[in-house]
Amino acid sequence: MPADGETHTGDLLDLDHAPETNGRMSVCRRCGSQTDGPQGAHHFPSDGQMARIQEWLVAESQRVHIERARAARGQGG
Image 1 (cartoon, helix red, strand yellow):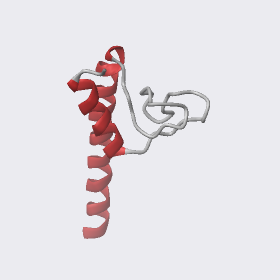
Image 2 (cartoon, helix red, strand yellow; image 1 turned 90 degrees about the vertical axis):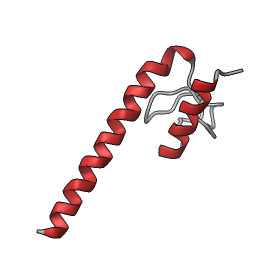
Image 3 (cartoon, one colour; image 1 turned 60 degrees about the vertical axis):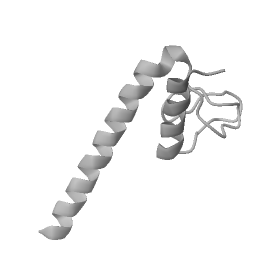
């Protein structure tokens, strides 16, 4: 049974994007998190992945913020 932090982080990843697996391995190609199975219905990060996955989520959030700022600047000027 995963710890609360792992479940929460998996939920955050699920909100960000659907798991992208190759159908044979239980790993998301986009973020590197383990998934609940080869078909990848949900992210299921292990304890050892937590630091890296949390860094990925911060970087992804920053990337989206920058894209939105660039789009707003392009539309306004």
